[in-house]
Length: 184
Image (tube, rainbow, N blue to C red; front, side, top):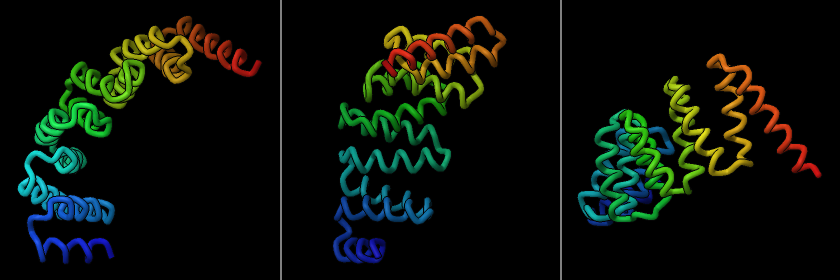
């Protein structure tokens, strides 16, 4: 229904930036990625300085594996809306796919603070099988927030996986102590 209504709106007035962008969202939700990308591109063409349309296009490109183009669009969006968490996180994701983890961390941290920046970067590094690098980010998160149960859980798992049983046990013990103190 939304696709019909929005298609009608853009056929009546092709300069309706927001309608093009919303049409792209509707296509994305239906799994029609190519059509969504086309609608986002039309929205950006109508209004090249609209951060949300650039974000939508960038994320669509990211989802379709075009990480370099996604990062380019998302960088433009981040310049236009430097405090928008969604844009900053999407840019972080695209940069991770390009192997630019330190740059990704900076954007994740701008979006949600340094602890979440470290946690998000660590998660992405884990997905890429880069356990040693992930450990460093989780350790940084733990240094910034000693009560981060997420960091402790990930560290316990990664220490175990990388053959560091003493450090794994230490993380498990710290997690147990935190859990006990929260219960009291």
